[in-house]
Length: 127
Image 1 (cartoon, rainbow, N blue to C red):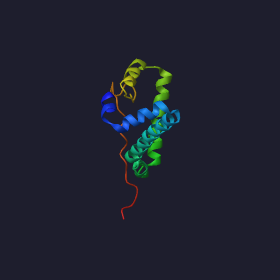
Image 2 (image 1 turned 180 degrees about the horizontal axis):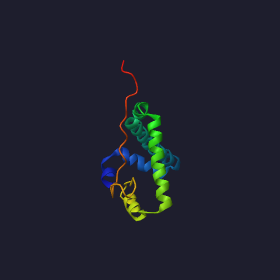
Image 3 (image 1 turned 60 degrees about the vertical axis):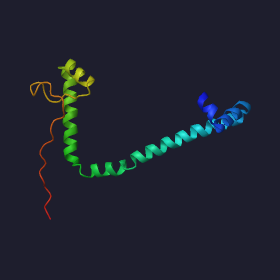
Image 4 (image 1 turned 120 degrees about the horizontal axis):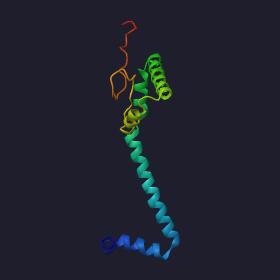
């Protein structure tokens, strides 16, 4: 800061006025905080302006019945696991790694990914 104080007349003026005037210090602080917030808001807006359109595009192709079935299957598996309390250590270790164990223990042991979605048959007529 001493380099900045020695070389910049503007910075020396700001420091001097902040020492002498509390209202100036308050105003300068508000300008710095407000400017930082405005810059942060502008950055967030610039990096996520397309998010709503992407969400709409992704949800447009979702088959509600298929997603409902998948969610019900996952919820049923979760409830079965909670009731039986089997594989809890394995599930806990997988959760710490950010994985989700699916399926019965008799299925592929140690499987740490979602079940593949069923093949979707095209019921709409081609035009």
